[in-house]
Each structure stands twice: as structure tokens, then as C-alpha cells.
Figure 1 (cartoon, rainbow, N blue to C red):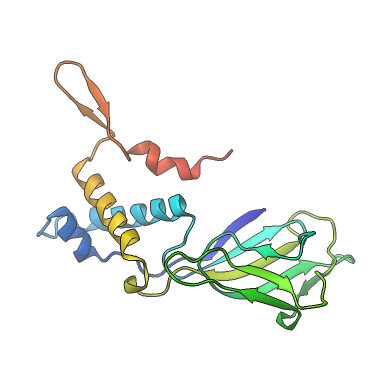
Figure 2: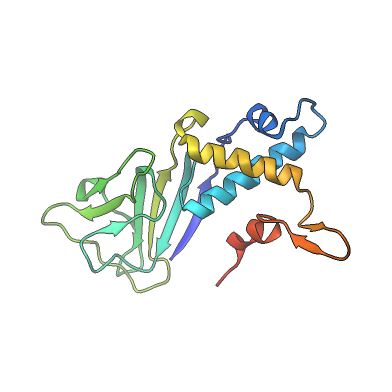
Length: 196
């Protein structure tokens, strides 16, 4: 199984002015730095919660339809399924008609994962036994404006931005030869990219 970002969010859930107020910055000298920290903090929160915050489109690829009745999409909240395509037994690419499946899109700040299942009496299409035989393209995220994102997640981003703005280095040199690792420094920013 693999997730591929198709369309990234076009805006951030925290505006530059909001982040600057959190950092207690009134000048424009560090605007580019703070804007970059907003992006990094949003990405951190998205990975930590497994929830895209702003509207974005993803492809979820896997080897075949499930043997159970329900397919659960990995990134809530989902607002729509754009398409479901698959490689049929003959090796041809097909699009599964939306008239042949139903969807459930839980909504709200704590929305659970969305699901897809064949219509009553229907079955999953047959696929060829190849890697990434099925692709589900779906739209997820809380919305297209910062106001649609839960305030607690927006505040987490602002707190991370302020923390990273104040702590510019991954360690802090104390008295004598003591060195203290700064929480949420390099490890926190890189762990989402580690492959297992």
C-alpha cells in the first residue's frame, strides 16, 4: 500500500500574522523564516495526527480490493472520492462506476476514517495480481480556510512555530560542559520521513 499526494494544500491553517503574534514578533525581518516554520509545524501535526488539515487530494494505491465488505481510507476527514481505478484480470485499466459503491464520510473535528463498500448485493471488481492494482483518489482535510481547522490543532501549530523560533539550535549549551537536547528539534522534524 502506498499514499501519494496529488494536490497539496494551497494555504496554511495558521496565517503569518497569527504566528508572529504567538512569537511576539512585530517586524518583517523574519517573515520568511516564520512562514517556513508554519509549513514545518503543519506537516508535523498532520503526521502526528494522521489527519490532513487543509483540503488536499491523495491517491491510495494497493494490490487488490479487500476480502471483507469494507475498505477504510487512511486519512480522515475525507470529503469525497474522486475515482476508483483498477487493473482488471485482462490487464486493462478500468474505472469503477460510483453507482456500484457507497461511501461513508464522517465529519467534524474528530471525524473517524471514511469507508467505501460495494452497493447492497454488489461485489468488489476482480483485479489482476499486480502491485498497486487499485488506486483510490480522494479529497481530504478539514476545508479550504483556516477557520475550518479545529482550534486545538491550529494552536498546536502556533506553539510549535514559537518554540522553533525561540530555539534555533537542536541543543542548548548549559553551564560547564552540559549539553541539553531541545525537545521537538531535529528528531521531531525528521522522524516522519524515516522508512521502516
